[in-house]
Image 1 (cartoon, one colour):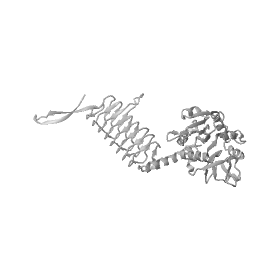
Image 2 (tube, helix red, strand yellow; image 1 turned 135 degrees about the vertical axis):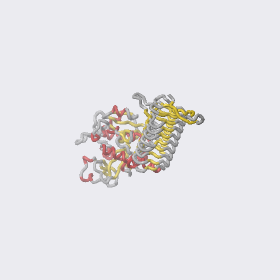
Image 3 (cartoon, helix red, strand yellow; image 1 turned 30 degrees about the vertical axis):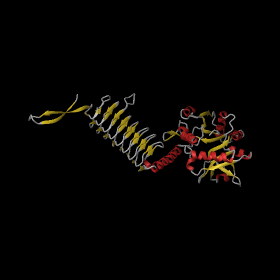
Image 4 (tube, one colour; image 1 turned 30 degrees about the horizontal axis):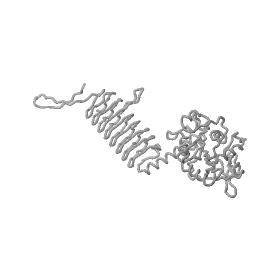
Length: 433
């Protein structure tokens, strides 16, 4: 959209978080809170985004890819929006104002807000919600005709305003000129010594400007992160949403409460996720798999079809081919596992040498025995067998079809020889030195 600019308010420290990290950089499922807001804006078609930073602005620059302005003194939401004016000289379009600590706001809600604003020709369109307990939120005050006349913040609410259940959500769409004209008339609040953006509502109303609203039926969208408790609540909401989507796609999650699945993970139908399993970002799991219980699959892992990843197995930067069995107490890091490979209980890929992460390749139909240690870099060939308790040293690749045993591993060769009776042949084995 060429006539829409968004201003994301992200200057606050978030004192109730009790943290040296800026509030909007705390994470939900591995992503900073503010990136959810930016993603929703872009999902709604908003291309031009300005982030107002303050505390921790250097850290914020490392995370967001928007234009950034600095609010030098934290004088409230009105001052934060006014700070962005320097980047909007002669701009005559519309401005979305949204808080950077509201990660659950949906793109659809933002699209509806913009559509209502444009269709109505309003000077301001704001989002509202009706709560059973409105404590802490600014109240929406209407006249007898039902028109919005002002927003009264909690600290200013009198007896009449305190009983109002309709509250301000904190996401707005303004005509740019009307926004900055009104901000020029906002005065410093005597109690908090701040400039409230919400004061522009009454200023615009008294100037005869049209004010519209969009009701937010899903009140979970308005959750703002002001404390660690809020962070946990937002995580719970997003986790439940992900679980619903996964199960509706044809995946069985036996215990959603004990299971974590990141939003961008992809899981094929008829796969079963057993309890206490962690599936991280950008993981891809195929069809008809069994994962867990107590499995940990971290970022960027690929698992094929008809694979068993059993209890207390951890996969890190690893791909596992179709038909594999990785059942118990195993760690595979930086590994490429072919098709129909059996990985015995307690197998470890020693992928880190103190400086570098090294690759282990296990080709199709190989068999890795119980308690094997594979020291990378290393290749186990097709159809090869690694004996139980074997330690295969780095660079000592196992050829196709061969068997290795021992510590360190040596190739087990078959040989024939004559027994004591001379004419009888018995097969024995020797270890190749």
